[in-house]
Image 1 (spheres, rainbow over the protein chains, first blue to last red):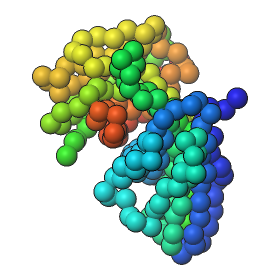
Image 2 (cartoon, chains in turn brown, red; image 1 turned 135 degrees about the vertical axis):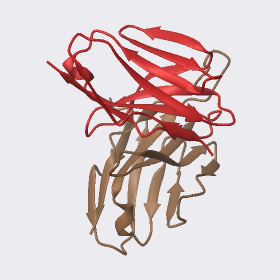
Image 3 (cartoon, rainbow over the protein chains, first blue to last red; image 1 turned 180 degrees about the vertical axis):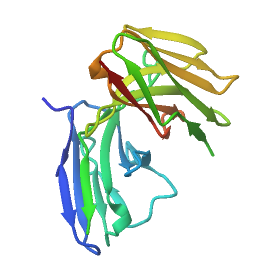
Image 4 (spheres, each protein chain N blue to C red; image 1 turned 90 degrees about the vertical axis):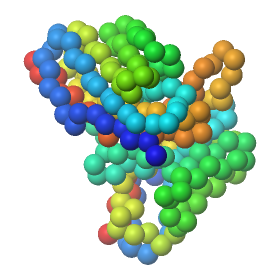
Length: 117
Length: 109
């Protein structure tokens, strides 16, 4: 009964390769996110995606591209992987704000640990 | 930009009370979140403050003072399972979230 799931859990690859991480949420949420958590445990938002509106953190290299086939999925594709891309990537989702919902608590997936050699 | 600061590490004893502080500089935000993250796991939601004051949820309470740029998370009756990192995050009107560096709390017997 997983709310937000990610695959794979671990990903080890060589520099220069292209890889994808998949994310699915079964909560019926409207917005999905990708976060990067580096070795110092800083959690930084990379993208948020809501009803086909993509908001990009301007610091994210364009080698990273989110792809959303439908509202329940937001995959992350990374081109030409670099050593500095090694981190844990978290997908998350939240419901939109509404009159009876003053905040959009995020539900996080279990994370994907990416190691670039 | 937005700047958030938290103590890197704290230690407390089982059964005690601990206060984890979060200070920030920002021109505006909707509210402030607190999340808990156990080692190797995903962050999980603890609390949200939009108005100044204290929000209580069982053993956990969170406080916000917008005028002072300050929030804290108060954990009472500490248990060993409370050993985790605690992250505060600014909610930029649901479009962007900026997380603090996190405070790693160790609860000792």
